[in-house]
Structure formats: structure tokens, C-alpha cells
Image (cartoon, rainbow, N blue to C red; front, side):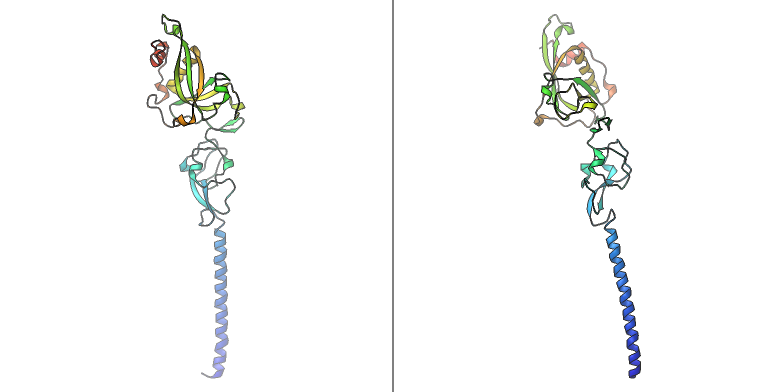
Length: 263
């Protein structure tokens, strides 16, 4: 090849290298931009895995684990949760659209107040009811029982109400491990202090007995040690599985259950 041909070929190869280099530079820039944009989207591999709504969640409803999923978000919002178990069972304060992060300001503890006049729900399992009983400083352990505590209930009954020949007051422990759902009325929920009422969780059958005692006995409560608390009911009680199981009570049923007249 002559020197003239070689001189012509060299500039052509130089231009080709420049073009190839420019194309590679553009591709590298596009790839970098794409990776940077992906880091800003939920569900990518960079960022923090947080709890988001798997489907639309309505306000004032109990959030189930099946309503949630983990998704990677960068940056993660404040008050976000990293575990589904931290959110499942809570109540939604507002509507939460599918895909939105579920943060602490959007939920309330199950059954707790959403505001002073807005209640999501009371956590009442199937077959149970909420029942309110009067309380006070001397009746209710000085106001120490609070939401989530357990109390034991003692009843003083005069045996004459059972048709017994003897007319003597008898004390019996009638209920134990009664779960406190609320302290006081909805408009006056307080963290401490003496209230006028306790709202308890009981089966439909026990509710009948408790109403009988409220009408015919003097009731006082004791506060149980937290070490003795039984598990909070979540399933129907096999002895009273539904509300229709309650069949009515009178003096005979009460005496048969707690033996006021037989010592």
C-alpha cells in the first residue's frame, strides 16, 4: 500500500473510533440515569423495605396481614414500619390506597380512640360482648385498673334471695381474669385516675350472670398481677360459642354456679 492510501485510511479509522466512543458514552450515561431513577421507585432493590398497602384499606377498619406487603422505597417516609406484624391488627384512621406506605400516623391500636369523638371499633371477638360495670375508688382498687388489665370480681349476696331459710351475706369470687376494654366513657378516656365505669369483655352467657349480680349483689373488684394474666380471647369460648347460647339466668342458676347457699 502506498503512503498516500495509508494516510487516508488512518483518518477514517480515527473518525470510526470517535463515533464508537461517543455511542458507548451515550449508552453508559443512559444506563446510569436509568439506575438512578430506579432507586427512587418502590419495589426496587435499593432503599428500605417497608410495609405498604397491598390493596385499598378503608378507614375505621381492622388491618389484616393479607392487606399488607413489604416494598423497597427510597427514601423511606418517617414513621414507616419494617415488619407486617407491627401493623397487622391495627385500625386504619383514614383510607389507605394500595401501594401507599403505612405509617404510624395513619393507624391506631386496635379498638383505641381515633379522636375524642371517633372510635374505630372495640376489639370484641365472636361470641363475646362488651359490658360496662360501675366502679369507684373503693370498689375499683383506687382507680389503678387500666385498659388491658385483668380484674377479679367478688359478689356479696344475701342468701334470702335464693329462698333459703338463712338470711346471711355470703361473699364469693364470681369472675376472674376479666379483660378491661375501656376505662370511663368514650368522651373522658384518661391514662390514670378514678373513673365511674369499666367496660369489660365477657361471653354472652356470662353477661347474663353479671347483669343478675349487678341487680342483686354488691360487687367489688381486685386487680390481678400481670404475671397471672391469661391470653386475651381471640376465638369463641367453646362453653358459649355464640350469643344465642345465652339461655337466661335466675337465682337457681346463680346458686348452682357459685354455691352461695351450700358453703
